[in-house]
Length: 329
Ligand code: SAM
Image (tube, rainbow, N blue to C red; front, side, top):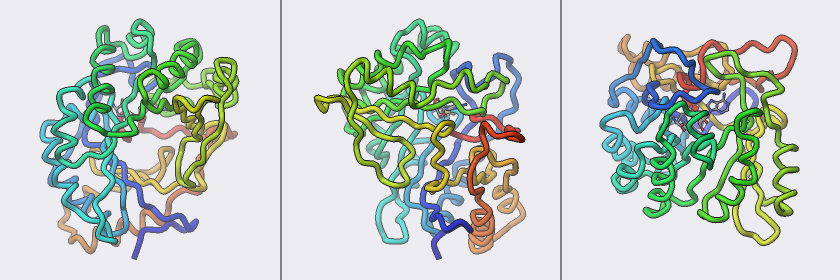
């Protein structure tokens, strides 16, 4: 029986964090201080979790982190996941979200192992702004090389994610529109969510969808493109059809009603929503010797409890105790 929650949503999309280490310290994600606790499991454990979930109807698997490319053995892991089949006997749609710093040299082997799609995070097309946000002095050229390499090997469409923060990079909106048109990539602007380690989130820092559209329209008139229902981004192109911009607006225009996602953290906990207040300890069940059938029952029970929606911006909103780098974005 396929995974479905009590709100009637089918769960088909798994995001698995394979490490919570990261080589960037983005101001909106990581704390400036050192000393965080890291935890990751052997790939054999992640593979078993993925296999159990694919047996329940998962069709897309996205590898994330932390920074997934920091994990030795990732190419073999992709190959092992690619050998699994959906309930309909189809290959899985395997994707990665990466900061792109190490991508240029790894993307060929990853593609050959079965990776289908890549989303690369890049929060500015201006190298100085990029360094200010990532707190890494010379990362920009690596990321640009990673984006171009992903295109070269055919991981199309290459998507570039940019989290907009007022006071940091809202001046990059038009620059990114040009970037999408020049490089032939989909640029997706993401509204900043309260999932950071430090307390920097406030409604004032969020650059919301309407403002993004206004700025894009001043550059060139935009035209909306059709969306699949479970797609998080609203898609746009320009009047001449060149370039594609996505806007992911969980704060100003939540899309929880169509959410098909479930997450596994790097320490093997299930999260049913980015804003869940509780984890569900799948790895703990494995350590206690649960069979695959018992794990599948547990996943079903957990998925059933998936939250109807998040409560960002509402009175009484409680920020989750784990930040994005630990949950896996
Ligand atoms: N290290 C990889 C990367 O940089 O893409 C994968 C992990 S990162 C947590 C995944 C995505 O989450 C990135 O695109 C990042 O910009 C985004 N992200 C992190 N914190 C966020 C927040 N508070 N609000 C919105 N997006 C966030």
